[in-house]
Image (tube, rainbow, N blue to C red; front, side, top):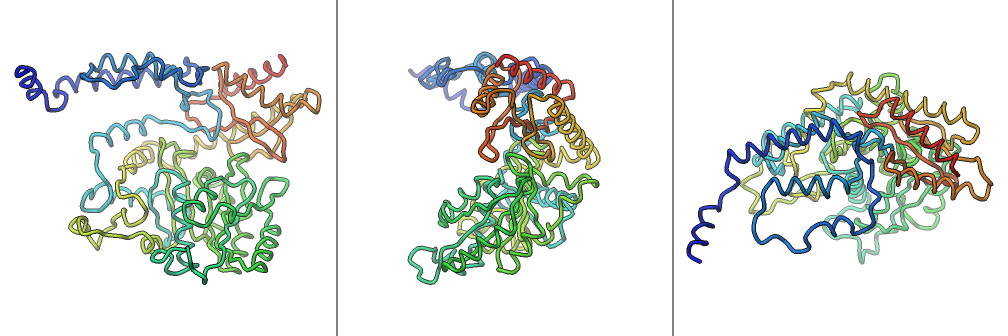
Length: 484
């Protein structure tokens, strides 16, 4: 026993430097090989639930294991059990992608391992975040009075934006809450039928209530109907409710449609409502001069969110919430306990003051590296090519009378449906086709419902996806249709 204890005392440090260096070189080759050969893998596994766990020990290890054994299990179990979102034939959602500079940024971030909660705990992380946020603000052509904060996702960002809206509509909510207050009517939030479900989740978290998120009808292009919004607000006012905020979406989840932001902004100003713009996906189009129309009404917003991890080639996760006069956000969330007071500097930003998180990753580094590597022009050129591919796919769909477009093609998203079967079977067939294609491992699509009908959906945006990949996917779709 004494010998064993002595051995443990000699082995209480980290992995020895030379061994770690060797592992890093092995890992660098592994990452490069994975990226180079990702197109040869199945896009998604066809495994049953529990299959991954069944291949790994149920009990935690008592003794440490070698790097070689761990990496072997990654190759044997983890990689085959992954949906490879970076695969060039992954065409679901919004073409989530990784990039070489983004991967390198993540690798550098890990050993730095800082907590970007205050300026003093991480001066470089804090100031780089401020810089990257302003670079992006300039690319988005937002007025100077907008400033931002980095979160993980837009779902978290909208919760923070609505928290500010709630505080301004019902003062002292931060201090007193909402419960038991006779002076607080039911607060209403309005979003289109096509808007993201994060609105309801934010309402749940903020005590507003899921049912107080009202879904507004959309037009033929799946954009919010401003007239319907106005009528809904009038009914709620007559019922004694208080309109709190409207969410206008620039690039909806299913169709990438763009709500009429200027019209919605007029209504918000009339009723003193908060206007939040969800540009999580579509906001990236602001980098293209020919797409400046997408920015209409942005200057009227109280807040806007964009996810560079969607269209701007920054790896997950990286989301930026912009607020007109960021101090409004800080007033809601700033809270400095005594054990942190020595690490705060009043003259500098302490990002812990702008949200519920105290521990904050150094997310800005990877975005900074991506932005510097590609530049605005390089990012715009890549987005432009994805728009070209979406238009090309739409042309292929229209040229095959067994298919029809289900929505106007907007951004890098194409919604279409197979119609070459009995009318009563069309919905089931479209769903079955998506499932069969995904199960094949050769491509990955998603499905959604538009006007109550099931449609197939392709999202372009992966930096590795070429025209040939898209052509291969279309031929697979057509062949699957022919087998029906």
